[in-house]
Image (cartoon, rainbow, N blue to C red; front, side):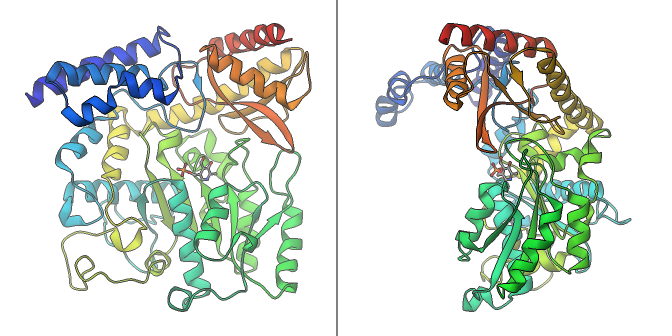
Length: 475
Ligand SMILES: Cc1ncc(COP(=O)(O)O)c(C=O)c1O
């Protein structure tokens, strides 16, 4: 029974992917939740349960029609990976055997895959320092890391560790009122959230001025630091965007790292999107100096074809990781020698999914070199799109892309921000493309994130034509 159902769900998924890739379905066919709920028979099915195998499969079929088709080459929306066709298998395995990987004894294979992939990442940063990939020990003085459910949780974890370093008593006594965090005014909102969650308040964020493309201005960093000192504050950490969410541009990581070293400051790199550049032979130039970080986050579910969620939070010294959460749960944290390694003492989550397994699996499907090639290709595609837009009249591109994200405007009929928004909504409601829009430097832009390996410059030429046609129609 299980085998037959899994096989049939597999067939439905295969058809779904084929149709998406061949553009036989729109990237997004969005309906109101009331309509979807009715089509999925949610009320009926929760009461009566699935009425046999056919009913279950009917649910899956209907469900798949109401999804955002990320494998469609016109999907160029949010920073969410387009997984490899078989990337979901570990989710099936995990969902069937339910081995959370935070306690080694609850999932030894998952815990081992996590430890191995953490070492793989540490090696990319240059932090493994001759240790073997199979060295799974958490060792003070050596780099370490854990996987966690997403970049927001990972940023919170890193900031909790930074707080523990500067104010070790805060865990018990609450925060002193002199802690601040410095970073680009364009830092991801999860940093401000983390500060509020930690009880420091959003006001503890001291923003550094950014240029017209929202990249941190290095010359303003000493000024903000001096202001913090003059205000009688202590700097808990300095945060770099690698890269910024809206633009895909990298803060000056290398110079920021030097500044932090000179002033003995904790340097945190938010590499949710762009740390993946470390895996791309051509792209890693953009993260030069990343090894100067004391903590770093790296999402695998953005650039690395891994299904959401899967993020690493990495520390140059395990002692920092160990200090973040100063808690004991008698039933889980053992003082005595146990087999393997538990990540639970170092994560916000108590139970967590088998994150390392899906990370390893996606890499193993084609070998790690392919992921690196994919990252380089997607970065290059944004550059090609930039060149294409520059040949066109009435399109403006504010910057040369450094990653696979590009913002642009079409201004033939209107320079109003609302017109860019209207263009986007019309295009996605017409079901032709799925793209996003964002505000940058006070202006509204259309925005593409190119992370579908099937998307080519031909699809982007088509997008340009679609924008022109839509604008003409709206005019
Ligand atoms: C720079 C940056 N940091 C953090 C995050 C949050 O990551 P997640 O969506 O995995 O929580 C994002 C998400 O886009 C991001 O771009």
